[in-house]
Length: 148
Image (cartoon, rainbow, N blue to C red; front, side, top):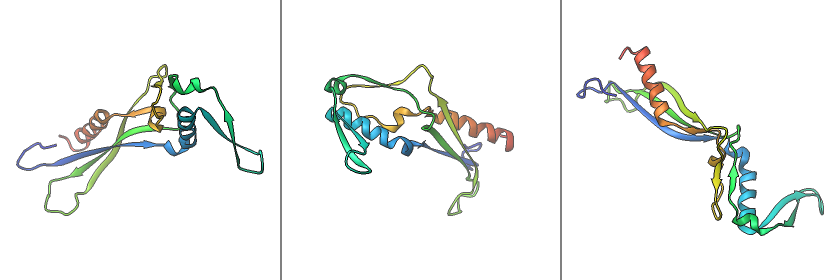
């Protein structure tokens, strides 16, 4: 953000992030495998601990649309950093503030996953990354703390 174009004061950068995806990796992999092959893979004790048991399944599921409900374990957010850019001769700019912005996915909605589509962990996110909310949060902080 520049109050005076010849001398920039602050720089705001952001990046989208997904947290908790690793918690649902097994489920995502299983759904994708089942949708792709029509067979479900289950771990079971058929011939010792950790043995894989393959069960046949009605392959109509591979052609149906699945509705994926949000999981509270998976959250997407836009991380932001406010940097002091008043002295651009420095090799690294000091970080003044970090924060995030996200929006909650309406609870009545689920993500439609059509036939042939791969499921992604981001399809299960309870929140979506919202760069606009991140920028708004950064600007509110600048207005309050730096009196801009």
